Image: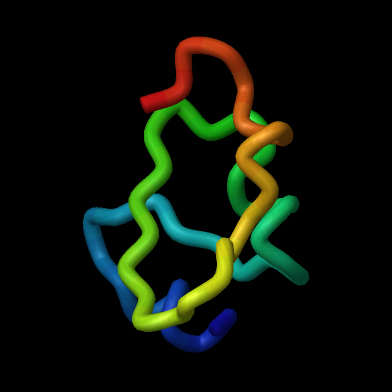
Length: 50
């Protein structure tokens, strides 16, 4: 993940340890998955997040 983040140009990207860390402080969350269970806890999404 760190290597991929470094290779992305013109995009702010960083590697994180888990989904909770990824959504912390996010203004917009996009998740594309084939998982049949949630990939993050919706209760941890801040008010006003899209």
